[in-house]
Length: 95
Image 1 (cartoon, one colour):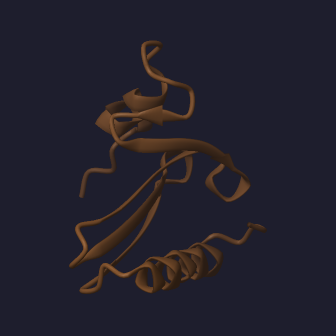
Image 2 (cartoon, rainbow, N blue to C red):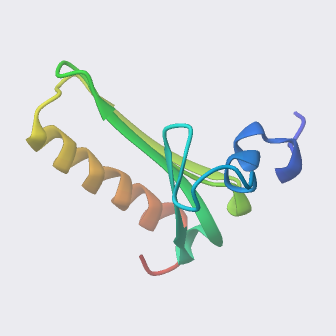
């Protein structure tokens, strides 16, 4: 199995490209998180039938994702919490 270096990951270029906003690029939110070791990418969306949320910590080679067959606001809140629990479980730092 080949482990990609950070510079090989296309998404890494999102938060380094000067033409993008420091907090948003190509549909991805960019923010600083201690658990991610610096900048992280996140994306969530619903089409009213499904909901998905994804966080990527490139510095730590970590991603957490949750998807459900419900596009309700309650599903969004529940699955945001589920991803938060995944992050806490797999990355031993405070959120």
